[in-house]
Image (cartoon, rainbow, N blue to C red; front, side):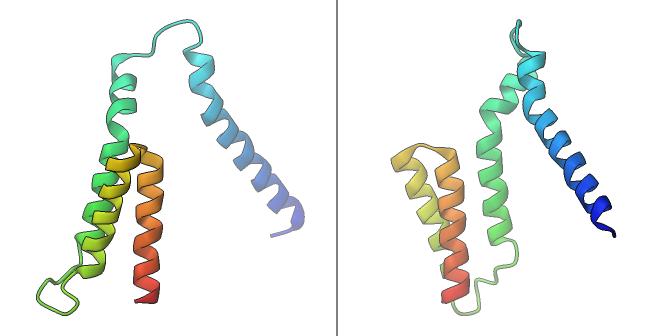
Length: 106
């Protein structure tokens, strides 16, 4: 790929990313969002957390040492963060970072 193609690809990705961020604000500027948007807004963070839990536990063999200790500890830290801070973003990122640190260093 030439430099021009790379710059064009970056520009297209930036415009598309910007449009996807701005579109809801432009579209719903004068009216209430539909019920399905409100539903997604309300239930999407817990769904993401459940997906992360399933992803964490999917390949664990609880019969082999360390018996899923890292994964269960990561889930407990995520639950503690969420129950104490009540912020999905901090819970998701904090728990994920803690789990990745456990996997890399233990």
